[in-house]
Image (cartoon, rainbow, N blue to C red; front, side):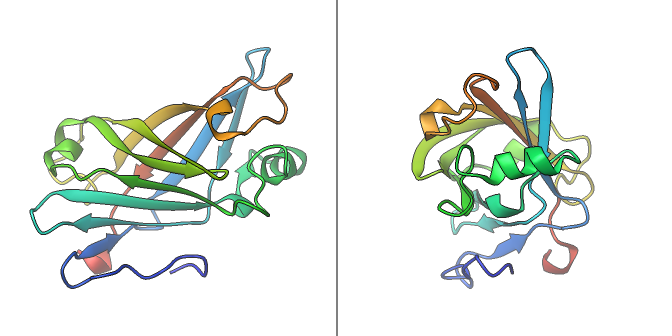
Length: 180
């Protein structure tokens, strides 16, 4: 567990399965006004899949903004962490808590809705899960999802003249072997 995470409540009633750090990846992409892609990653994160009493699932993801990396560029990484963008000093986490959903969503793909909290603002957002490529998604293959949000909706107003408004988040998640 990372130092900025908190233990789950009612773990006995709502079993939680953590993410496998060897396979799980969180990333983002922005476009410049000239069409160039700027890609970044969140190498420090915490997350879990919780099985609710009614059998539905809920995903909780926390991404550390002070560890964000943009390509191999120290300059772009500093800009992303700085007060003109993620403002990691004041807003150290991006957090997503999904609405409860049926396990079949990971098999068939579709819309995963939930509350995204970033830069001091929380909004309901949707991410699209890709249909699974195996019989046991999250165990034998990655659960893959992506979604796009408006920077302006979250007050990420820095670099408007250079960067477009959309931030595309992507994730590849596998569940932790030790916790299955």
